[in-house]
Length: 346
Length: 161
Image 1: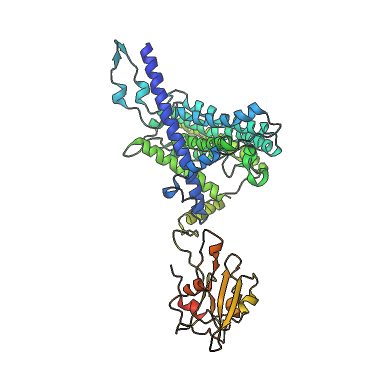
Image 2: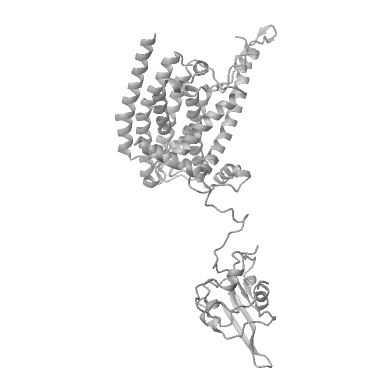
């Protein structure tokens, strides 16, 4: 590979990552507004609608407000870990987007023969709508998504507060319990598609989404998705009625905002992942594929909010019992049944 | 348990599309109740004469001591207030002055919001209170038989805005 090719690739990926992070952050801001307004609608009120048309400037007003708050560090906190935890909560959530394909490969660009000083330039990175087109995308996503709990657990540990510590502990225990069931449900998709590359999985779903082949797997994935992102009814790490605010109790200013952003970006990421695996990804009957992708993600986010408006929080023992006694056996059953059916159909 | 979850989801979805309880205040006016007690006014007879006879009953009954009256006598022997002040910051809008008034002179209107930029402006003088009286108020006495029925003024006036 020539030096031009490498430089070109780095530049293209850099630009792509920049655009993606911008779009994700904007989506995240709009998601906070959407959540507040939708929750309001479901509670017979309007929600924030005063700042800008439909309240669209509310997230930015909140961001500016957060910026000017006092950056507080509790006495006896582990300074390094305390400052590192919010970064660890946000960055893995952003990393996870690297493998999500937002649209199909643009063949005309990929087949174009570009040469600089007689050296052929690989136009692969420019032609596909995914930042890092690796062939173990599923594995990468699962690994990065489970890293998000480190930020939460470390925040709980380093804050030197009993409530924070309990929140961090719960986050860790919850993540271990629900990661297993989630991986099993994803594994059955991998078995059907025979590939760990997300774009291949999307192309296999043309005309027939995997949710129709794996309804139980999708249900398990939905439940684990809520648990993975610490959302209601699995929001035990930040259970405000028992733990005040849980793991982010001692945080303020931009550090708190980073936990908040991390949670919402993680929601967005895991919704994108669910869309890619089960709901046909960017496949749509007509129009630009990225809009179909966005529409599916939107409905999953609305599902998150709908669940939050409806269901009360689990008790800790109920959470563990549900995870280990029902969800994991069910997911193993689903995996075995999928394997059996696949063997019989072969 | 699964059925209950779906029932709950259906309820929240139903409420999502229901009309909301929130009022778009202050963009749209708040609709006050029929017997709402808002900013006071001093009424006149249809001939134009002030109804207030400076009997001091409202000043006496006022639990917040918001009313200050000074009286004088006309040449024909009738009495009238030369000074009638209501301190709107002190007032608790209990409506006792309206109940106590034998002449139906002081009446609580329906104005909900009347903010000012200074405390001095919140002390309403007699002229201000007289000017606040609505045109439609013809000076009828309230029905004697049932004092809990809406006042003649309250029946006739919609919130004006």
